Length: 167
Image (cartoon, rainbow, N blue to C red; front, top):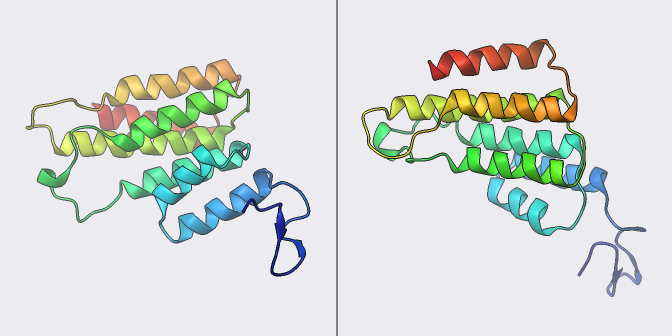
């Protein structure tokens, strides 16, 4: 049942209108608090509700925090970072839809890049694809340039940290 359709048990509307970014962000925040990243990604990709810059920030922060599991051993680290791949998909999706992002969203993307670079550095001795932290940082900067977003202090600090982590 769609959220804006009649609920047969109450003879009323669950929502008086179709859900928008505010409702989507509320649901995503609830999923973030429960660490339900896959459910949040599925909701965003299949929900049909347009997101906004806050939606991107929530999703990207969830991706970054999912990578900060300190209990991971070098052997358990993946060859490639699916979180970074998802970050690129989200950035492209927002750009394709013409939805502007802000420094908060780009800073969150840089946090994912920093974590992916850190994991790649931990697994340096292994063969396989490696996350290119420098290239990823420049990709985020390029996205900011195309969106005409000037980096703020936090974003500039994260850019420098990403480049330092990439070595």
